[in-house]
Length: 334
Image (cartoon, rainbow, N blue to C red; front, side, top):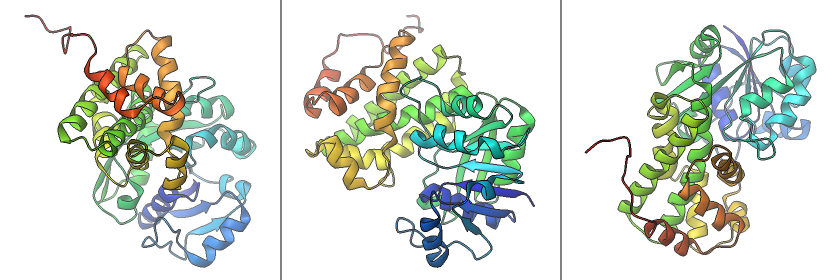
C-alpha cells in the first residue's frame, strides 16, 4: 500500500482517487479550497460524475501541506494552466526524490514548455512522471477497461507509477519518451476541436477520418522535430488518445468544437461546456512550436484562425481542402 495524494478534485482527479483507493492505497484528495473540500466531504461526489462516489476512507482536504508531506506519490490533476502555480505552491512541501505524476495535458503558451518541464523547473528535487492516453474520467471512475501509458526519465519511476495505478480494469504501459507522450496528449485536444467543428457544421465520417489522420501527421511531425519517437505517436498517447478525443461525446474539446461549428463563439462554447477546454489553451502554443521548429501544421493553423481571429469555421475547413497538391508521404519512393 502506498500513500497517494491527488491534487485536483475535478472529474479526472475524483476518478483517479476512486481507482487508487480500489487498488488498496491510502488516498488523500485535495480540493482547491477548504470550502469546496467541505462540500465534497458531505456529498462524496461531484455534479459531473454523480454516479462515482468517494469512499469514506478517502480523505478530502483543502490543505496543500497536508496533501503533500509524507506522501509516496502525488498526482497533479489540475487543469494545465494551473500546473505551474500549483507546482510553485507545493514546492516547499516536496522531499528529495518524491514522485509527482502529472495527468494534465497542455503546453505553456508563454514559454512553450511541456507540463513536466514546468514542474521540474519549480520542484527540481522531485521525480516527475506523466500519465496519458485514452482515459475519459467518466469511464475510469466507473471501472470501464482503460489502457494508458506512463513516461518518466527513469525506468524505476515509470515502473513505480505503473504498479500504483494498474489493476484489472486500468492497464498501464511504461515509455521512456516523455516528450512524445506529452506532445501527443496536448495537441490531440486541438485536433479534437477541429473534429468537433466539422461535426457542428454537419459534415460526415469522411471529414472526421481525414482530420484525425492528417492531424496525427501534424502532431507526429512536430513531436519528431522536438526529439520524440515515432513509436510513441503511434501508441496510446498519440493515435489512441487522438481517436477517443475526436470521437467521444465525453470529450469537452469535441463538444466545444461542435458548438463553435453550430455558430457559438469560442467563449460561448467554453461557457456552455462548463469545464476547461484544454485545446483552446494549447492551440496558440502548438502554432508557436510549429513556427519555432519550421513544421507545417495547417489544421492547427486553421483552428487558431477560428478561435482567435474570428475566421469562419466553414471557410477554414474549405481552406484545408483546396491547399496545393502534394504527396501523402514524401519518404515513400515510387
